[in-house]
Image (cartoon, rainbow, N blue to C red; front, top):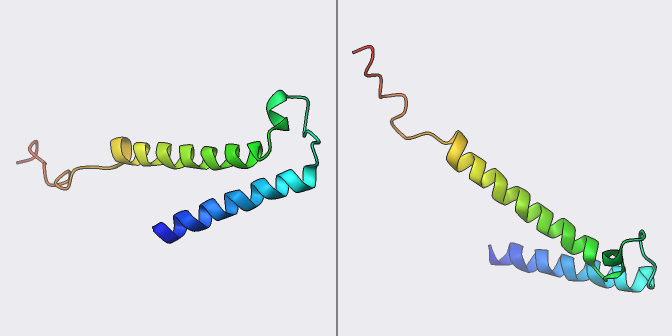
Length: 77
């Protein structure tokens, strides 16, 4: 787990540095936040974290069943 976190943070830092050195102050579009260095890298990273969190919540509260879900057949006994 710690190795994955270190690799992820290292990749994020590399992408932010590439954005700083390759873009040279050029904006992707006319929005004010597009001038921030590494905004789109951070936005993508946070978007991935949000997707993971939503998927885990859906799996836990909607898809997951109790262990004895199929054993409780009280109507036919």
